[in-house]
Image (cartoon, rainbow, N blue to C red; front, side):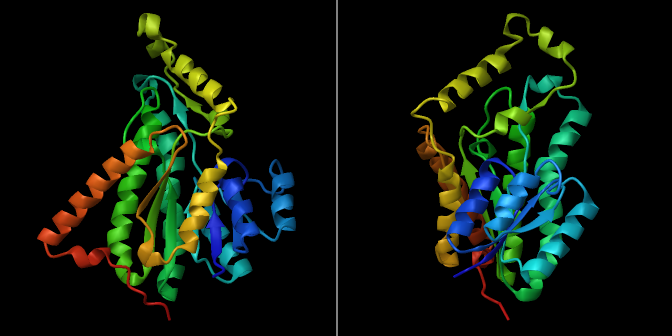
Length: 293
């Protein structure tokens, strides 16, 4: 069944792959990005030529989000699925990130997610159906050193998605998570570095450990054996092609062998959640109720 899908951050990385993949599969795509008539004009025009609707959305700006979602509904007629993909990474000693740094990262990766969800939910609740998909990360379930602020945002998004799952299922709205591992996209080109550069020096001989680790990752991603980021777009398409009642809450996508370990954590989390809610006779909140009218 053809669905109308709004994707944030459609100008690059996973977002662009997802947009192209869904277009090829016959879905109606609403590709959002910043500055589609300026710096992202060529990408926007290419997507538009393939049949996508283009909307200008800056997820850090309330007015931009609200106007963009309204414009999306006006163009496409409806939003069946929201894919929160827009995000930014970090690199550096966690101590080096001051509060303003953390606010910047959270504004994009966490508050941006909440802005988008709040903008689409009135429409979805009125229709009695909808799907929220968060592009999280394996780092939403464990941490790697030197990605501290990013780790924290993805843990926050996972918690938000869990809560929306419980609160919205009774209204026919499904909350899902995709957890990509490391892939060779342009993600590393826009990393937010810490403002307090003096802190790194206090770590002595290990001061440049973050940069060394990133260089090692990038070397792996440039190799012939590197995992293909198209795997993430294919996983999302597979979710949309799966009956809602059969969709897993979390989907891991990784080509470096970490799937099994993270799936184990996910399974334990799911079991604990189900057990706790059952004990309090609240397990019915997991059931997705089809209330579309």
